[in-house]
Image 1 (cartoon, rainbow, N blue to C red):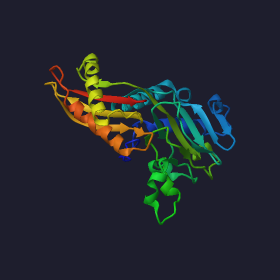
Image 2: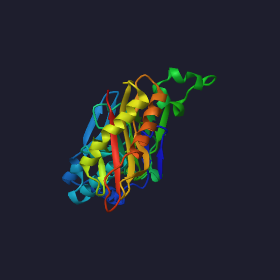
Image 3: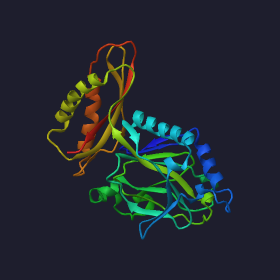
Image 4: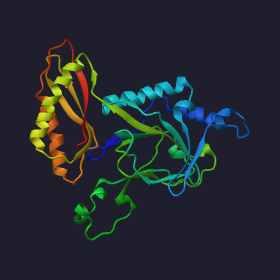
Amino acid sequence: MKSRNSRQSLIVVDRFYPHAKKLRAHFEDRFADPRSNDSGRFVWDYWHVPGQYTVLRTPAYHYFPRNLYRPLHEALAQWGRRNLGCHDISPPWMSCYVDGCRQEIHSDLPHGPFAFVLSLTPWEARRFIGGETMILREEMLNFWSNLDHYAGSGLEENEVFQTVPSLFNRLVVFDPRVPHLVRRVEGAADPRDGRLVIHGWFMQPRPYIEGPLGRSELQKAIPGIVQGLSAAIGEANTLRGIASFRFKVTPAGRVNACKLVASTLIATDGDKELVSKALASVPRSIKALRFRARSRASDVTLPLIFDR
């Protein structure tokens, strides 16, 4: 299952990793005997920042043996290249939430353009309450301009936050600038009964090409896309974020099937129409491109970064 919000800044992919059960089994084995002195039990940091964070955490890339970790890293990185135009991921953490653990509302501004959370929690059989990822709804970020939408009614939690349960093997990708939290876990004392997730950030945005299209030829085409964008939005300089497009270049060098695959693009002045114009103009410019003919088609993911 895949789901997105209207801005395509929240992406949910269920049944993401085919070997997720092997990762979970390794974790289960390490905690199987509570009297064991295995050094693998002592790699967890109890991270506690009063009023903000309480969680057990460890670097996932050290916790798992190389033969288990490397395929996971490559699966995440490859997904990011095709769907976001991000070449790699940050060194990911693994966090375990037992009774009392939570993350209060925060943003991840200095990290990569997309955050991710991959759940290894047997959610349907869980023995705790809480543990959902909660992301502030987009309309809350421009609350006063959306006030008429709430006229005559109050606001409750589900109207302020979008709640995403941590289903087993669910990948959640979102705009890390948007305030988010993890609801407090209650009722899990054994780590095997808690919320277990691997998380980090997709990084290094750059074009990704599958096929014979040359990178230099694509690079030469980008100024034309920028010109089309400038014609659509004028001199506006309030756009911030990243928008990634995926398109196919036919053997004849023509472009078809161009679509927006992910976007964190916002206008700092709240101008949604400006964002819409920008996102609509890029596919038009991409479809107008012409490339040298080749023996077979190419699939391209092109991330465009707006930072001024």
